[in-house]
Amino acid sequence: MNAKTESRREKRRALNSTVAISWRDRQGNEKQIQMRAIDISESGLRLESTELVEVHSGVHVQAEQDGFMASAYVRHCTRRGAVAHIGLEFVAGTKKPFSQPEDNFVDYYELLQISPNAERETVHRVFRIMAARYHPDNAQTGDAEKFLLLTKAHETLSDPQRRAIYDSRYQDRQAQPIPIFELREFVEGVQGEQNRRMGILCLLYLRRRSNPEDPGVSLLELEILMSFPREHLVFTVWFLQEKQYLRMEHNSNYVITAEGIGYVEAGLPSNRILYKLLDAPTDEAVSKMQAGKAPDTVSKARVASISS
Image (cartoon, rainbow, N blue to C red; front, side, top):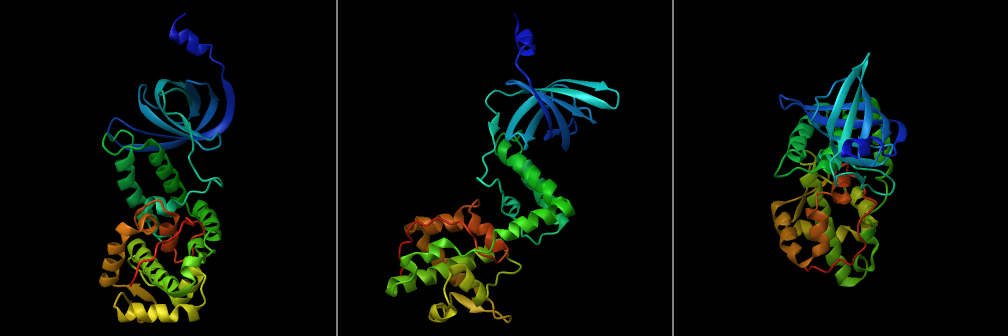
């Protein structure tokens, strides 16, 4: 029995869901389209589409409803009336479940590294640059999983209605203080004061890096982000101003200075938690500072004291 006959005898499971397919045409243009999934087996997927896809094309599949993504190539594409039936064969080892948080929420603004206030043109421009970088056909930086997430982000943020629904969910996740500041190390004695100083500078660093057009943070925002009353922050802010690590803008918001940035970066080699907070592009705290709100999930590991 040949491989083709064995493939036909594979157990297939009927589907009635929509999947996202992306590929490059002969001219090298990036194309994405939603197709209806007909059935699936261990080795492949059958689809129904209004658009033809050239046989042997390499494609990338994201089946959100069925919880998997994969790379594949087109085995056949046949026009049947107004629609085409397309057969895909999965590339061995590429089919895998989504690696998303338990609540299935992905921060698209952080993923695209843009402000939540970004206009549609900005979303499209940034997506094109990042899609080219992470497209699986890029031998140097290709990443199929990240490319598919970028595609989903672009589809959501480019559509006004879908973006409004997404933004409502996004804002619901912004309302809690950063848990790390609730640790004893930020509360008691001189060590607590020293850690609060570095904590404020880290928040201002994140804001300036992620939102350079609006890098200021108000004292009220610092209260919310750090879960401290302003009376506990006044001395800290005064000290940082005297050291010229931050300054107050005309609108009474605080911004980090070049001296402050240098101070924070000098402390990173001896503090891996802060290094992760500031340097990891997937850290949720970075994205939530873009909106000027409080992240709700940050590691609760101890933060070592960094003296002033």
